[in-house]
Image (cartoon, rainbow, N blue to C red):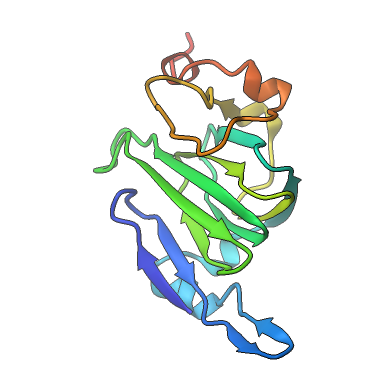
Length: 182
């Protein structure tokens, strides 16, 4: 497994496994503590694993966590997704950069998303399963949602959007979502 920095998003990494393929299929290590630690990420800092399943065309996002933020390691374990990361850390040299990836069960590549970045994806297959490894327990009071169709973000979703949650459909624009509260 190797770690590949993502230059468009400071502190983001792709973790590319080396699958072992034979007539039965493949075997692939999807997490390696030593490789994660080698790039300065605390492998023991992850506290929760989650899994979502989505139908083709479904969009989930754009989500981030307020407060101390939330870093996550995301992998498509089955199917394929169009994955989107937006750097919303004001002090970051890549502030407001957007980076997209195709993650799939075929490659088992993971993307590490630093705290303070928004994340979302669209399912390219029916179904797609996405595994999340998160560094903080979920606190719904800190959830921030930004419209997946915000013209300022102008995310090039590759398929027609077939379904989103009510929360994602009602989400405010980037400017409204990040407006300071008084």
